[in-house]
Amino acid sequence: MRTLSFWVVPAVIIASPLAAWAAEPAPAPLAAAVCANCHGTEGRNEGAIPAIAGKPAFLIAGKLRDFKADKVANATVMPRLVKGLTEAEIDTVAQYFANLR
Image 1: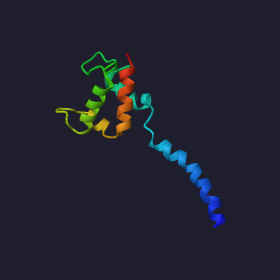
Image 2: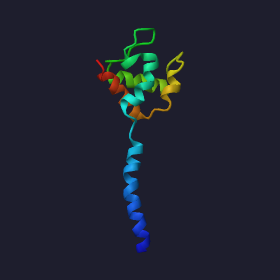
Image 3: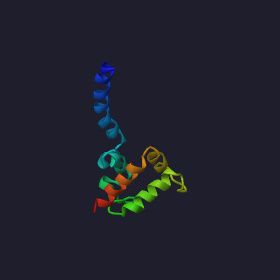
Image 4: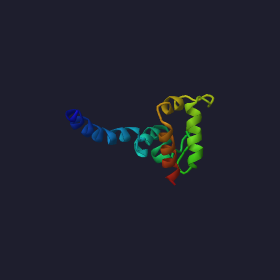
């Protein structure tokens, strides 16, 4: 039993921070980098696709959730891009763009 404890306790101690790290959302600039392809650098697009920098976080997050749930008519790429985001990542990305003024 002592031998088992000798190996199990250190394994649990080492694995605990790894599990917490894996559950954290991706850093905002990393998660938002794909957005720059269409919404422009730092969300400041001047073309047909809307700029998102400086918009309220709750509006951005709400729209992302609508895309994720396929509630937006005639959406092309956004539903596919948002499908892989967690709720925490949606909130993080929304706050990131809201803070860009």
